Structures are given as C-alpha cells and as structure tokens.
Length: 388
Image (cartoon, rainbow, N blue to C red; front, top):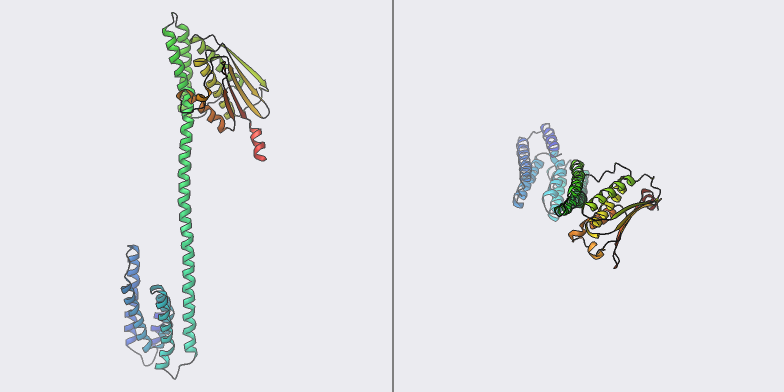
C-alpha cells in the first residue's frame, strides 16, 4: 500500500504545473529509507536481534519528515497518511501512536488549507479523518486477531506437548506390561522346565537305575526346547493347537511322569464338568492351560501329595479350573506375596487371569492340602456386561 500510494503521488506530480524537481528527490529518499528500514527489521527478526526504540523512532521520524516535505510540494501525497498511521501504530507505544496519528490527520487536513486555501474544502479534512479512523480500527482488529491466533497457537503447542507426554506414558506402560508378560511366559515355560530338570537330575543321582529319570529329563527338555523356539519365534501367548481338554490331558500326563521321576507316587486325575465341546477363545484357553501347568508343577515340587484332582468346568458364562491336592499345604500369605521367588509363578498367573477379567484364589487349610481355583469369564458374559 505504501509503495502504491507513493508511486501514485509521483506519477500525479509529474503532470502538475508548475513541475517541482524536489518531488522526485524526496520520493526517492523516502522510498530508500522505507526499504532500508523494512529490510533491516526483517534481517534482525530472522537473527532474533532486537532493534532499539531510539533507532525505530529515528527511522519513523525520517519517514514522517520526508512525507511532510512531499506534502508541502504536492497534495498528491496526501493519501500516504493512511499507511503512515498503520506504521506509527505498529512502531510506537499506544498513547504516543494515537497522538502522532492525530497529528498526521491535522497535517493531511490543514497543510493543504495553508498552501492552497482557494481549493480547500471541508471534504479535504473529512476524507483524511475517515482514513485515519479506518486505519486505527484496522490496526486494533488486526491486533485482536493476532492475539487470538497466538492464543490458539499456544493451546496447540500445549496440546502437542500433552499428546507427546501421553504417548511416552503409554509407551512406557506398554513396555512394562510387555516385560511382565515376558517374565510370566519365561517362568511358565523355560524356568519351570529347567526347575523340573534340576529336581529330576538330583533324584537320578541317588537312584540305582536312573533310566526313568533320564527319560523324563529328555522329555521335559524336548518340551521346553519346543516352547523356547516358539517363544523366540513369535513371543506370543501359548498356542493351544489341541482342544483344551486334550491339552490338559497331555499336561496331566507329563506331570505324572515328572512326579514318578522324582519318586512321588501321586495319583493324577482329570475331571470335566459342563459342556467340554464348547469352543474356547484362545486367550482363555491359554490362561487355563498355564493355570493347570503352574498348579500341578507346584504339587509335583512341593506338595508330596497322594492325590491331586484337576477339574475343568465349561459353562455358559465362564470357564473354571480347580486343582485340589491332599499334600502338605502351603502358606497362602506367602503365595500372595509377589516379592517371594517361590510364589512368582502364582502372582504372575493371578495377573494373567485378572487381565482377562477373571479371578483366582489359593486356599490351604491347617490340616494340609491346597486348593487353587480360577474362574475366567467367557466372551459372551463380557459382552453382556459391556452392553449393560
């Protein structure tokens, strides 16, 4: 706008009579000073260097003086007052800027009256007044819009920071959850198998015929090698390829062999309740299988029981696993203490079941024996609960 009005004034002045040679000179000086100031401001802004107030006011004063000189030679530069008001409001403080704007209007309105009274009219004062008021209104509207934009920019920045914090928090929570899952998987597979191998090897040392223990060690090692390969391959939950009842039968048979290898004469029984032909979701079946493996492993290693009964119940709303033995019993307070190494498997198992919306309890009466009971809601029950 400044360049257009300055060029317009120069072109109009070329057709004025008599022609003033000072107009092109002052116009070039004003254009050069204006370009110098805007280029300097842009350079300092990119370098994040502040321009002193004295330099700003000196530059503005030079622009205004040159405009006044042009206005005394030609009225064609009158409308430069409009961009000069915007420039003044941008550079100076509010009160001085309003006073200077008032002065600019007085100059634009009454300098022509002083120089050319014969052509002056009221419109010559009203026109610049309207332009001055309009320029002030535009400035304050722009400043309000700029403040609103900065406000939303600050909100957007805060929102991005919050999203980044939330993403980092979710990532950390995911890492911790995955770490707990991996620790449970390792305990339920490799660690549990190695523990059984250690116990079988100790039993073989004191046996005159260790062939039975060696065969069981070989079987346990082969099973754990297969589990470890699967675990490394996909780091997934145990894949129950068989139906759950068949997988439990295989688990009970393996535990019976381990107990025999350790010299235990425990009778292992597997019983069923409900509809065992019902298709069980993979996470529920895997948790039930792990629950059976952990419970029977504890019986083999610690209970010295004569009988242990595993009962699988599959009902319309839930799956239940009950493992009851008549062994020496256990301290249920220790079983609930997740810091105890001997109860890590039970605490991990409880977390696994809780993650599926299920419950688990361990009871051991004073006269001996232990009962582990787990209940896992089936998908239909969870969907009904979600719908309600």
